Length: 104
Image (cartoon, rainbow, N blue to C red; front, side, top):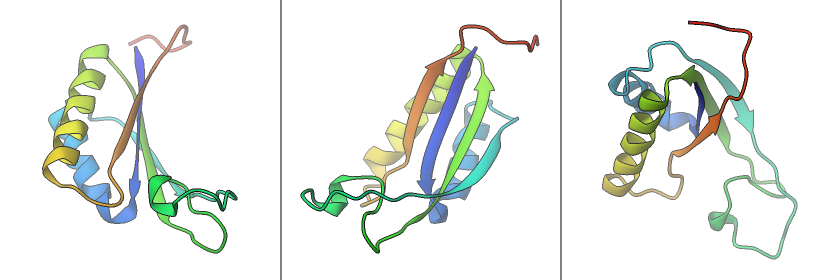
């Protein structure tokens, strides 16, 4: 089992939902995220989280899913980012789940 996590600006959430569907991830959750970062030395476009007065409304979409579905989701996110360049790419993470009280 894997924990598949995707973060995006709210304008991209429908795209992420479609990518989840294509990856056979049909059960997922989402939550609103507002990121902050206080580091004035770096370029704000190089970092995901805003700093100072800048804020970006984002969403985190996540699912506990199979390894195959998580890998497919990661591939789809990477392909999307390559074909749709933007200042705010969709970001994806796969985290292994060592133990769980849930059995499928």
